[in-house]
Amino acid sequence: MSLAEIQTRIAKACEEAGRATAEIKLVAVSKVQPNARVAAVLDQGHRTFGENKVQEAAGKWPDFRMAYDDIELHLIGPLQTNKVKQAMQLAEAIHTVDRPKLANTIARHAQDLGQCPDLFVQVNTGEETQKSGVLPTDADDFIAEVRALDLPVKGLMCIPPVDEEPSLHFALLAKIAARNGLDGLSMGMSSDFERAIALGATHIRVGSAIFGARDNG
Image (cartoon, rainbow, N blue to C red; front, side, top):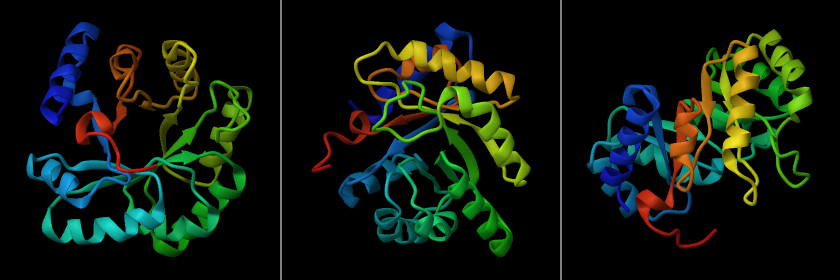
């Protein structure tokens, strides 16, 4: 697979769903990928990337930003409160706002920094105990809580259980977003992004299908 092939699949999925390709932001998940592979994708003109860990992002992206214009970095992994300030200085979007303590920490640093990345609330649609995210039954209240902090909530994010039909989870996320007046839906990965696009995804997160298998992790 390659970037061009993924873009072709996105275009076909959008056509089948009656959507414009411009509605879809492809987040190339570059976590633990060698810099040479990341540079190769940058050289093809792609500019939107996703990282799981703040420390890895900090070691990689400042140098890339010096060499390439218009990079847009999305943090898509669990975020510790002690990494929030650094995350906010590195990224244009954070997809994993999942608890009040994290939201309050972001709000405090937003005041200090005078700016804030776009935020997505992570919803644990499968109610899995080992996975981050607010439970679907708590999502409305938590979204309201984050908005009350004057934070830029752009949408919702989910990672469906690996052993369940992802479309059910994408539909649930879209329903929660719609009733809260949110347009952004970060959902869909290499194996299921066409189904996510059909159900309204605005951000899809694709890694190994673009870069090849990760070296580790």
